[in-house]
Length: 252
Ligand SMILES: Cc1cc2nc3c(=O)[nH]c(=O)nc-3n(C[C@H](O)[C@H](O)[C@H](O)COP(=O)(O)O)c2cc1C
Image (spheres, rainbow, N blue to C red):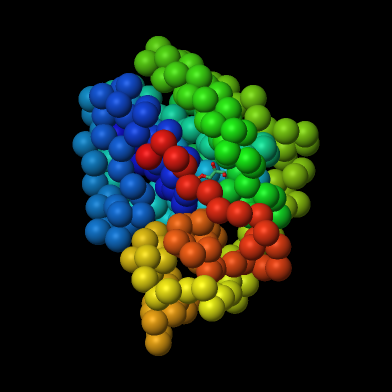
């Protein structure tokens, strides 16, 4: 069983690839939350989490999901985390380990894989050839992660923490709460009112009024799916995202 959260497809791709290798199901965490599916029989298979790095920490919804998760565990459960990131993870792995510990959930191994950075409020989406190269390298890294999981290796195998991970997470992660404010999103006249943003928002934060998206809650997860999936690139976040492009994992 692999639980994943994904805004632009990197984690979904990684989770589905690993699930295929391990012969287990990949489950979208937001679907599980929406349908209140928290009970799983995990006695006979490894359990994984594939999550994006957000502000050198984790998407906020993960904590609530872990609180409600009610797995039946085997005698020796093997539970792993795979973080995807654009640059580095900071201390996100330890944040997850701590969340598991606080909920008395078992935890065995952490891995990290660099993919394409989708944080367009700050960074530009790389050119197409660079995306292809990054995702080819990610595939190689995922093969190695799958092999380690199949051998049930335990420990912290994250090589992408970057400099001073504890300090950077402690300093930067608190900003995530402020940046999740939906007032930072704007919609331009390019919007064709197709409603894709509303239908696909993982947190169901978006509604449609007069044929245009409106954010119904003051905060969202900030996965940026709406911005990246918009067919006319009509959604922006802050002043710089517009010139930084759009990205959806092309391998899905
Ligand atoms: C709100 C937000 C914050 C992010 N923070 C980080 C970060 O701290 N470090 C990093 O390397 N990448 C960061 N990223 C990039 C994502 O972790 C990366 O692109 C990830 O693979 C996206 O996964 P997804 O396509 O499944 O959503 C951030 C992206 C978003 C949307």
